Image (cartoon, rainbow, N blue to C red):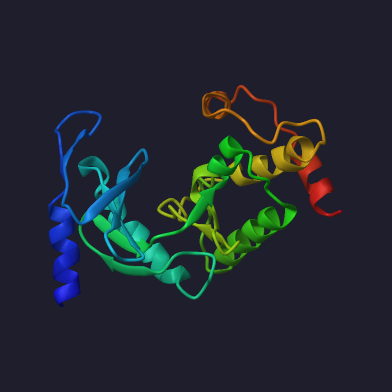
Amino acid sequence: MTIILLFHELAVSVKMANDHKHTLLDYGKSLTLIGQGRSAYVFRIEKTNKAMKIFFPTYAHLAEEEANIYRELQHLAYFPTLYEAGSNYLVIDYLEGNTLFQCLTKGTPISDDVIKETDKALQLARKEGLNPSDVHLRNIFITSDKEVKIIDVARFRQVKVCTQWEDLKNAFYCYYKKPYFPKKIPEFMLNSIAALYKKNLLKVNRARSSEFYQR
């Protein structure tokens, strides 16, 4: 009970402005800001191996949804442990390592094994009756122990077909693995590619990734 109360108190300490950017105004001294997404801020809890995800007010409903999905995936090592969930927050493992996005901006090589392990993780999630969606470079981690971890699973119950992971896999096998393809890509360029992708302005040949993947 004390630990749960502590988590709640930490969550309450996070203050955001009532604007369209959900500007961060203040947060407890025991929290260190480590990330911001389109629906939440993420903090590391001081002197622990835990991270706290605080959803923006307009996305607070996702806290319960994502918590329930994590609970269904707890027996799979590819997903972080869920320690606690509140009306607008989650407490999960703090992951030491780099996302695939960070690997690309730093020039850290991404191996075939990482792609295959990610694929396996998503297949196992499908066997649980989920529909992995919105899987992108920023929510796939390679930990300091070289393990693959997937975060941000709130959209794993979407009904519509999401081809984002298949398209990333295609890009890996058809482009990234080429000897001449740059292994270090500036952040602004990755963001530009993502923007074009979201507007359906990039041609994707999904059949080729399946061909390479089977080799």
